[in-house]
Image 1 (tube, rainbow, N blue to C red):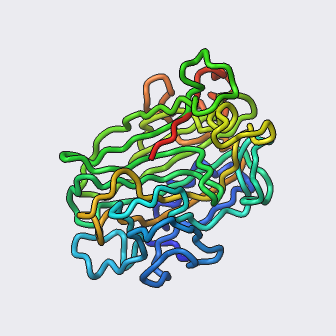
Image 2: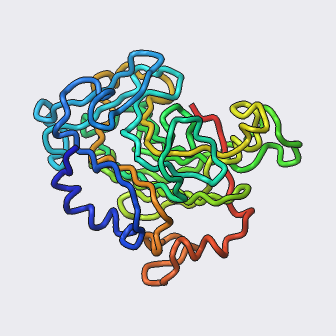
Length: 328
């Protein structure tokens, strides 16, 4: 797996938060330059995995054949559209990190392993295959352990007018007074992250701090280096909702070590052979960074405030975070 020209420069910025985090385990950035055109599953070592329920419209593509591909993506990228939506949760998983991340009691179901870490980070750059809007295009990404047990969710979609990003977390149960555990009661909350220029590439970075206890994981989403949202994970879904956790032994959080990329929404046949291009994909697990990227969001401090994510975590009220939703 080769580090791209952009990644070689951007790694200093993208991994600054790990400067003091000895023992961080990183896969990538994957720039696909050494991959073969065609299906991504089975390529690389460790390999991309997945078992889609239908023939997803995706694969590694040669950018020379596409005049709209960003020059920064070099000669190859991974492409996915939602011309076909399988309806299951295993379209394409990145190679897994050696060490899983999650709460100390999180369930790995033998899907992940290594030394349990409290922190997960993923980053990728994506762009429209056509260099323009493709209304109805809808692809999501989720931290996962390789079997569809998603622990967070970011959706990239084209509306009639914009590229829109959304974040989904789980915030307890709905209604809040519902006795738990309960079936189908998880309160999935969708938060708009903003609209963006569909004609240029954008970089998304998602960080997760796993904290033992209820409703207190911290998930941050950055777009093009800017913090756009701080929320929770999907821990409440697994701990409180029996849909995926039917027995008491299952009612714990889940581990993560990879990124799921999945076609979503309603099938849009017009996106066949197009969709989004992905490049410079990375996954990292490790200790919580001593000083993660500074926040520019209201209430989250700012550049130079000296207030690390770890410090914020120690003074954050447990009820300040939450998670859940069964988004398509």
